[in-house]
Image 1 (cartoon, rainbow, N blue to C red):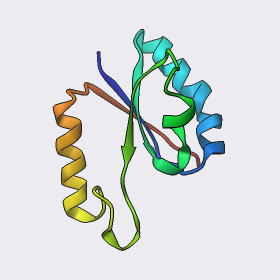
Image 2 (spheres, rainbow, N blue to C red):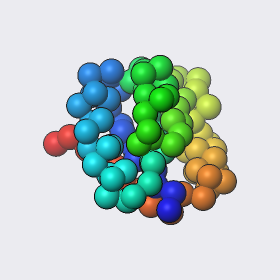
Image 3 (cartoon, rainbow, N blue to C red):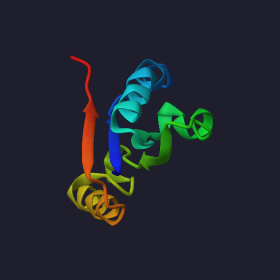
Length: 96
Protein backbone atom coordinates (compact mmCIF):
# COMPACT_ATOMS: atom_id res chain seq x y z
CA UNK A 1 0.00 0.00 0.00
CA UNK A 2 1.31 3.46 -0.83
CA UNK A 3 1.19 5.74 2.20
CA UNK A 4 1.99 9.47 2.25
CA UNK A 5 2.92 11.12 5.54
CA UNK A 6 2.53 14.90 5.44
CA UNK A 7 4.79 16.80 7.81
CA UNK A 8 3.65 20.43 7.78
CA UNK A 9 6.28 21.99 10.03
CA UNK A 10 9.20 23.69 8.35
CA UNK A 11 12.44 23.14 10.25
CA UNK A 12 15.05 20.44 10.65
CA UNK A 13 14.21 20.13 14.36
CA UNK A 14 10.57 19.45 13.55
CA UNK A 15 11.61 16.75 11.10
CA UNK A 16 13.79 15.09 13.75
CA UNK A 17 10.94 15.19 16.28
CA UNK A 18 8.51 13.58 13.84
CA UNK A 19 10.97 10.95 12.59
CA UNK A 20 10.06 8.40 15.27
CA UNK A 21 6.38 8.80 14.33
CA UNK A 22 7.20 8.28 10.66
CA UNK A 23 9.09 5.10 11.53
CA UNK A 24 6.17 3.87 13.66
CA UNK A 25 3.72 4.52 10.81
CA UNK A 26 5.95 2.61 8.37
CA UNK A 27 6.15 -0.34 10.76
CA UNK A 28 2.37 -0.29 11.36
CA UNK A 29 1.63 -0.14 7.61
CA UNK A 30 4.32 -2.78 6.98
CA UNK A 31 5.89 -0.79 4.14
CA UNK A 32 8.15 2.22 3.60
CA UNK A 33 6.18 5.48 3.43
CA UNK A 34 6.57 8.56 1.26
CA UNK A 35 6.79 11.92 2.98
CA UNK A 36 5.68 15.36 1.85
CA UNK A 37 7.87 18.01 3.46
CA UNK A 38 9.02 21.57 3.01
CA UNK A 39 12.54 22.13 1.69
CA UNK A 40 13.59 23.79 4.98
CA UNK A 41 13.18 20.45 6.74
CA UNK A 42 16.33 19.21 4.94
CA UNK A 43 14.73 15.75 4.81
CA UNK A 44 16.16 15.11 1.35
CA UNK A 45 19.67 15.56 2.77
CA UNK A 46 19.56 13.37 5.87
CA UNK A 47 16.72 10.91 5.25
CA UNK A 48 17.50 9.76 1.72
CA UNK A 49 18.99 6.47 3.04
CA UNK A 50 16.29 5.80 5.66
CA UNK A 51 14.81 2.32 5.12
CA UNK A 52 11.39 3.45 6.41
CA UNK A 53 11.08 6.19 3.78
CA UNK A 54 10.34 5.34 0.16
CA UNK A 55 10.18 8.80 -1.44
CA UNK A 56 10.72 12.35 -0.25
CA UNK A 57 8.39 14.78 -2.01
CA UNK A 58 9.29 18.45 -1.57
CA UNK A 59 6.49 20.97 -1.18
CA UNK A 60 7.44 24.02 -3.27
CA UNK A 61 5.51 26.86 -1.63
CA UNK A 62 7.08 30.26 -1.39
CA UNK A 63 5.86 33.70 -0.48
CA UNK A 64 4.13 35.82 -3.10
CA UNK A 65 2.95 32.72 -4.98
CA UNK A 66 6.44 32.13 -6.41
CA UNK A 67 6.56 28.37 -5.76
CA UNK A 68 5.23 25.60 -7.98
CA UNK A 69 2.69 24.58 -5.31
CA UNK A 70 1.74 28.12 -4.20
CA UNK A 71 -1.76 29.50 -4.49
CA UNK A 72 -4.89 27.77 -5.69
CA UNK A 73 -3.33 26.64 -8.99
CA UNK A 74 -0.35 25.25 -7.10
CA UNK A 75 -2.71 23.28 -4.86
CA UNK A 76 -4.21 21.60 -7.91
CA UNK A 77 -0.74 20.92 -9.37
CA UNK A 78 0.23 19.20 -6.12
CA UNK A 79 -2.99 17.18 -6.11
CA UNK A 80 -2.31 16.07 -9.70
CA UNK A 81 1.27 15.05 -8.82
CA UNK A 82 0.09 13.03 -5.82
CA UNK A 83 -2.65 11.36 -7.85
CA UNK A 84 -0.04 10.11 -10.34
CA UNK A 85 1.83 8.46 -7.45
CA UNK A 86 -1.28 6.37 -6.57
CA UNK A 87 -1.19 7.09 -2.84
CA UNK A 88 -3.80 5.04 -0.98
CA UNK A 89 -3.54 6.58 2.48
CA UNK A 90 -2.65 10.08 3.70
CA UNK A 91 -1.50 10.77 7.26
CA UNK A 92 -1.08 14.32 8.56
CA UNK A 93 1.37 14.93 11.42
CA UNK A 94 0.02 17.86 13.43
CA UNK A 95 1.26 19.57 16.59
CA UNK A 96 -1.42 21.20 18.71
